[in-house]
Image (cartoon, rainbow, N blue to C red; front, side, top):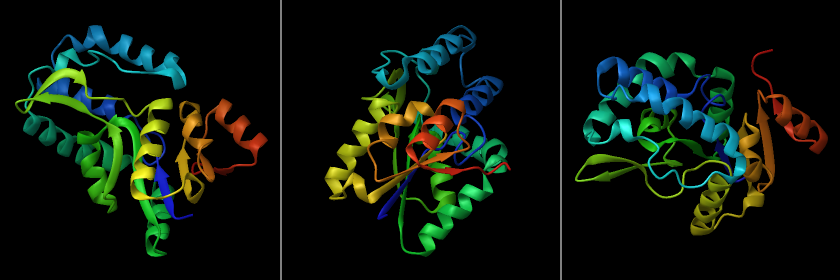
Amino acid sequence: MRLHIFDVDFTIVRCSTVREFLVRGLQTGLVGLSLGFYLPMLFLHYRFSGSKGRHVERAYPFLKGVQRGALEKLAESVFAERILPRIDQVVVARIASIQKAGGEVMIASSSFGILLAPLARHLGIEDTVASEFEFENHMTTGRVAGEPAFGEGKRTRILTYLEGIGISPADCAFYSDSSHDLPLLRAVGKPVAVNPKKRLRRIALNEGWEILDTRI
């Protein structure tokens, strides 16, 4: 495989990066208290939208007006304190082995690029396809910019990215824990289920995909 693409939440790291970010933001006062009202609806949307999830017009109104620099600073502290200790060392060893052999590695996550930047730097990964916050004058609008990298949206954005760099999906591997990523798993040459939940494990076994269990 020429390019190895990794999901992040519960694949590279054993937690939800968005949840850790929002909880810490609430603790520091960066995130508005209205988070408590919106968060259940947000997670229900992503849980039940499956591969048909589309634009979320105002998914993060509790972040409206926050400066980009403040989000970046929070992302750095969350990474150091909450994400770094939860990195899956087996998956990271796989990434390091691919890199050592000269393979290319990138991240594809429904989490936000600004949150994932510290992790990508830590792993020596240069390319990331992720959801993005919308900014105006360096402050968040409370909306998502463009297509979230979730479900079918992740597949569409990765295929567009691959076309732009001249790599066939058949020459790619994709690693994920979630059945929400089935559109992209089925589009690449080598799908890998990482600590898969029940539905994805069943599909992976039926399809003969590699299953990477790191918690055995």
